[in-house]
Amino acid sequence: MNEEYDVIVLGTGLTECILSGIMSVNGKKVLHMDRNPYYGGESASITPLEDLYKRFKIPGAPPASMGRGRDWNVDLIPKFLMANGQLVKMLLYTEVTRYLDFKVTEGSFVYKGGKIYKVPSTEAEALASSLMGLFEKRRFRKFLVYVANFDEKDARTFEGIDPKKTPMREVYKKFDLGQDVIDFTGHALALYRTDDYLDQPCCETINRIKLYSESLARYGKSPYLYPLYGLGELPQGFARLSAIYGGTYMLNKPIEEIIVQNGKVIGVKSEGEIARCKQLICDPSYVKDRVEKVGQVIRVICILSHPIKNTNDANSCQIIIPQNQVNRKSDIYVCMISSAHNVAAQGKYIAIVSTTVETKEPEKEIRPALELLEPIEQKFVSISDLLVPKDLGTESQIFISRTYDATTHFETTCDDIKDIYKRMTGSEFDFEEMKRKKNDIYGED
Image 1 (cartoon, rainbow, N blue to C red):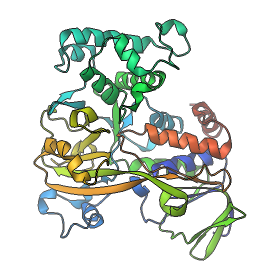
Image 2 (tube, rainbow, N blue to C red):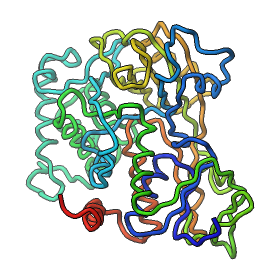
Image 3 (tube, rainbow, N blue to C red):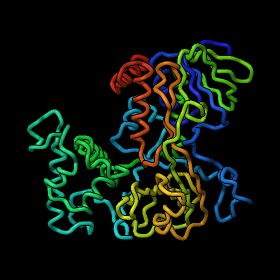
Image 4 (spheres, one colour):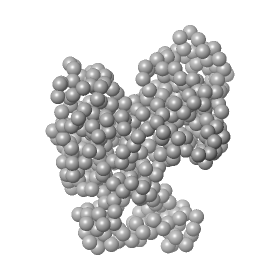
């Protein structure tokens, strides 16, 4: 323990594990510790099922109808991967994909007027969809063609829109899209949680819709991927990467003190020993005095013995309930996976509802989502604070990740990773650079 490291990482959440993997690939000497005996921190997958009951203080053992406890791997934080998104790029470039198997999620659904509809994934589905009327479909198709051809580096594709200035609201107007279609586009395709984006420059929204379409184009059923055995596999994959490059891992290590001298971190004390470092990365739970609360997320894990109604018996899906449909400011999400992903006993389904808390009665807020899942065999409710660092870490060299938000994909987590990387190294995170460094060690394929 009494050694000098370039970087010490505390907590094995996904953000921490990816950063420790990248730092190790970059030739840094990394020590990675976690106070828990398991990987994943806040983003762990809990197994066996008995441990989930204990964690949520549910009295008694799981009933026999739940099958073998060991067959369960239940994510505490539900998310899917966008097939063409940043996390998949990180996985591919670092070759962490060799430790993981993915399945495509069977469908994405959107809630309208109390019912759920499949988000159309092909032109044929769009034309057959009962989400829109015939004329609306034509206008929507024109809009999608515009988005597909849009290239922010080529002004000929703008058609009179200034991507850096024109608000998205104006773009919808230009294509004469109605409120329902706007809801569906902004929330089920661009995956915004609120409507703030309508008054912001349209470039970001257009790129988000492009990401959705490109992700969809890769596998066809939906743009989302999910790893077999649960999301807890992701941090472990990056932890292995770090170990290949000489990173040191220690689980079950109580952290007694983060040692700061003249305002700058110099080491970490655990079990009476001190490990020295130049920089520290950690999740908010290790530095409660250096983070502030900006909101709360409620998540409800539901165990079901049936697929969700009106999803065509899908063994995995996502349902988005746009805020407008239920008089809220932020969307409600449902992520559903099942025994097909080796995360539940045979014939069982796990549906996880999540949203940003807006009132004093968060459980009431998610009722519309729970109604879609009835009958529910067992519920596990958690309300977590959204914590963000109070400063950028420039002075202290302590770089703190943000709490995982209510979104159902990892794009915001990847933005945080790139942001911390830039603050630590002074340079932009470059996917290609990561690829080259790997090839130096493994040689070209």
